[in-house]
Image (cartoon, rainbow, N blue to C red; front, side, top):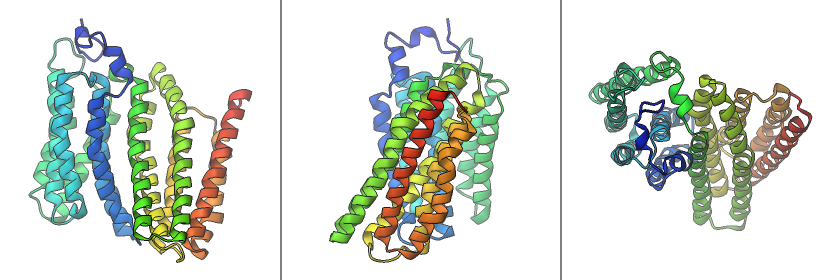
Length: 395
């Protein structure tokens, strides 16, 4: 007897249901490598980053995020208590560590190492899905893990020996193949989505957000340690308020909304909604927090100076990315347009009308103070509109 993923029912064991709803300690141990990955990749954004630095961050961060989210979904389906899954996580950790170590020069002399790390992760994913596809009674055809995991692994591996632009073109093809195939349900149907544990998905994404928020706190404290002055201390305190407000928005309201939205999508077999709000949109959200953290660290380092151009873009862009991702996720979950615009509209107006001028004209501590005020106001607006929509049943 098999469940909808084709896994024998007896494999779940007595504690199977609990495993599907809570992240296991093995997953938490696995996430430690991402603490390093986020820290290393965020370093390029400190100070006065330009378009090259922002582009480098996005190009190198997405494959790392994509590896993490694919591994997390796999664990969601198979359970972290399985010895096979635990072996997979252990085998993937050195690969992600290699990608992190190569990241400072991941588009230059260490690009070959970054590519081999990405290939390694996909090979690990292929091994577990290949075995699953060969299990008796599984609805998953063998060609899907071959195209989704093995072929991209080969492309990443081949790119390690290619010169210059050809290497990065192959990277783009490898990522595009996975993204396109994820949109095509041929041979897969809705069975894997029906089998997913919503609580586990929300918890895993929440833990990744904790990692990114932890990096923001580390950046602020490290900058304060290097510039131990009263002005830096005030700026660090204001930066902590910003991080705390973002955390409260996400964990007090965002996770509850995500649980309800994903549950509705799962019940209605709305697989595209589940895919978008688990695989794609959280990437924009965590990028927003990461670039915002870099700007806050720069402000703490030089509180009396006006923020350099790159830090201004990081400050305003980080706020916009965080709230744009939240707005898109809310709309995908079925929240009314009027409700979402009730807090996202003011976000756009205040970011361009208040925060950007403040970052241009005020010393860094003043720009951070405006950011704290903006985030606080948007939190109140979001809470008010959401509560109002629930009590009135309005769109």
